[in-house]
Image (cartoon, rainbow, N blue to C red; front, top):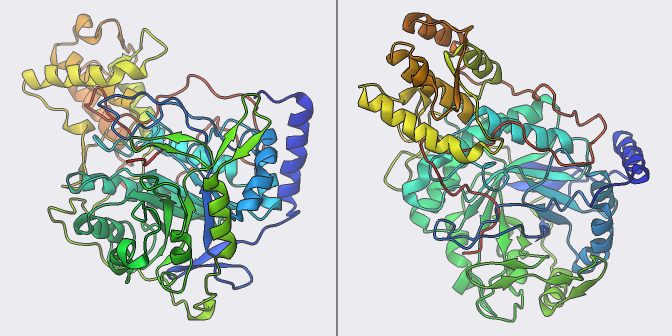
Length: 546
């Protein structure tokens, strides 16, 4: 819904209210493995997933029915005001939003929820190209920029509980190498949050799985690769998307094994999704177990899925339906049953904050067939180095279409096959989370990687203009060194500082969180995340729903 100028002015006034601390909600922090409010009380998440489902294409390459588009749930103040009474009836103190648009104005929704004592858990990934691709993972400048821009847009709000750096990126033991890139994202996001003095937590939401790889994954994400008990590269909050409790089950039948697996976990944990639909009606009796003294030693609550209708391979989720004019909310038995359970829940206020213990970060688990991730993480993506490289490349990607994301993967495949046929390799753009080896260009935007591949082929073919064409998508850079030695020297100079960790900064031209928010969504711009050397893949994005 497009905002009027009057509504936009109101948004600016609300932004001012945030900056002056009006209607402040208590800060939630982590002590050891538990969460506490500023007054020292134990904090439990009594949440609900709050995002309308975007467009879903049922396809063999999309087994989880992950949406290809999204509707920002925190950008429509009228809708948030409409839903607030129902969220209050449910008794929730937190909502989880899976994708947000950093270019939109979120003042109205965030103020509405803050005034009501409702925190937000915000996933930083976007569907499609805006996530760490589970099939061909990487951690690149464009993804880092998307994450940082979202944090910057929300950093002025006092009710952001946590930012998730990924949702179900790892779904099986043979894909655990992708955790290397999730951990690098957590490290860099945490560094940025520290630089802007934000108290928001850094989290990850995991698919449920066999204990042989789920526990090692959780331990890897909360470990210290340096072995010095540092939390710089560790998550603060582990989320488990768990649907084991179906119907009127019991703790022993559904949760006892999971509780045992995480008994010694070192950071805060919660159920980032719960609410099985295979044994209707949903009674939500798992709430009584999750928010009880039986599970409170490990878990800090959970997020019920889902407020809005959501289609899955298992069936239909959702607690309410919204009228076609967007004005009327109709609740279901799912809603009233959850309301009953959340209202009755009374988790213990223990341990007291002083007894929670200091944060501890063990060394990372050894690599195995069930945990392939290396403790050597990729560097912090360096935008300046990648821009320098691009400016000095002999052949540059100049797409013939504005929708170039659809062709970058196939052109990379094609270019690397040509280089391979001539005895070369594309190792410079590859990233291997198992070996811990990351090519010098693997942290750059896929378009820069493509320009690099084009340039390698162009120089290998004696700087023949036709070898730079790539179907009209490449152009010779007249300002770049024409010789192989000159090109290599320029590339080495640009990338000399791109092999270490650093504190990320807001990209030039991005809107500052303290400035005015825009009211329309962005279009065009740099390519967001894309798996390298894969023409098409499923990026880990929004929904669990298996």
